[in-house]
Amino acid sequence: MPNSYIDPIKHFQTNPSSKELPSFLIADEKFFFGVKGTVFRSYYYSIFYFQSGEAQFEVGSESYFVKAGDVAIVGPGLPYRWLNRKELTFDAIIFNSDVFRKGFDTSFINMLDYFCPDADKVMEMDKEQRHNFSTLLTTLKEVRFKDAAVPGILHAVLMLLQEYYHKLPQNKTISQSGKAEFVSTFRGLLAEHITNKKNVSFYASEMNITSKYLSEILMEETGWTAKKWIEYHLITEAKTMLSYSKLPIKEVSYQLGYQDASHFTKAFKKWTQLTPREFGIGV
Image 1 (cartoon, rainbow, N blue to C red):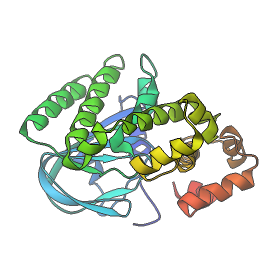
Image 2: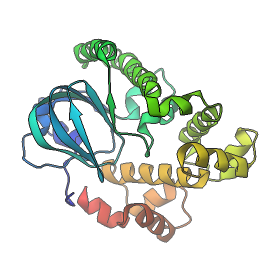
Image 3: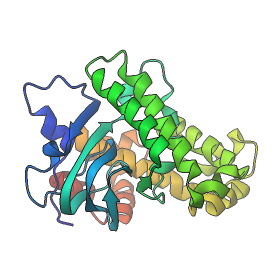
């Protein structure tokens, strides 16, 4: 994929006629297909429901075949694009956690398995699932400009997808595992405390288990240790701050709890192959 991307949220917000909530957007394929070969990337969560046609859908370094009835899910920071489109139509839901600030504990987003880095990005739904999902999506589109209604309907959409994700054959064993509850608890704690608690020992203590056992469970269930999960969330937060705030790199480093900017730069480059400054130029 190329080094330059279009951020759909920033692109949409430049439209002075927009009534959309700043932390939430619904758009159709016409919004995305204005420029041939465009690659999109934002630090919001993105869900695409394909209603007709087919295409090759690239997310990061992975490629998927998508068709009518499929749902594609893209986590924050991942670049994506459509290739070889054939009469493709879809609805896109793009949001960040701010949409849930009133009345919800936003940490639930980080416990949604389909937003995990190692999760499959495309889900196939059966007829009943498509009907249920379409019904909620239609309702969400009808209330899209009402900030009092959007959070509840969007929450229902996300939890329905979580149920469907666990019904996929490759995920049934994981969803029935008692250890999966430990993973969900850890990810909820991580979402709540990541900005000020970065030691594995803190999370292990909160869960009344040893640090070693916590990492063993996470490695078995997700393929990542607790330390790697902490690093991932820190870098994801850093990407968001570099993209959507005007804070200098030193201040971002300080707010994320790094000892100095050089340690932050080293950690950031390890995950992204770019320095924070290089990343900031590209967004």
